[in-house]
Length: 124
Image (cartoon, rainbow, N blue to C red):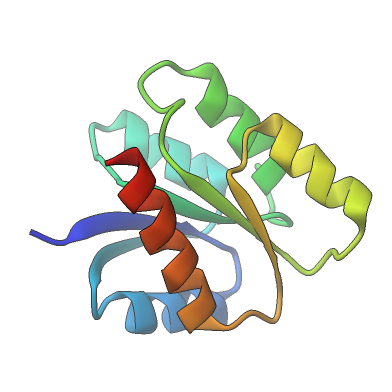
């Protein structure tokens, strides 16, 4: 059975790229923002890893990570943050909030897939 990835990004093109590329090896679900993603999780859906954009409407990636990490049933889900922000202070904020990794847009989907596979291998 394929592992499940939740993609959270307000850019349709990024969601499509990730659904297409990661869909070869993972079951991919995509949501427009952190609020939709949190609702999806709280509706009883499960995911093995999350890829979230930093800048989104309603609930941005930083707020989303904080909420996920504060809820016991989601606190251990691996999460990779995607962002157009290359500043070290933004990376540190995300990592301190609980993101497991941080990648800059534009990104290479193959590199992202390898990072996901490595995290999933470590967490079992």
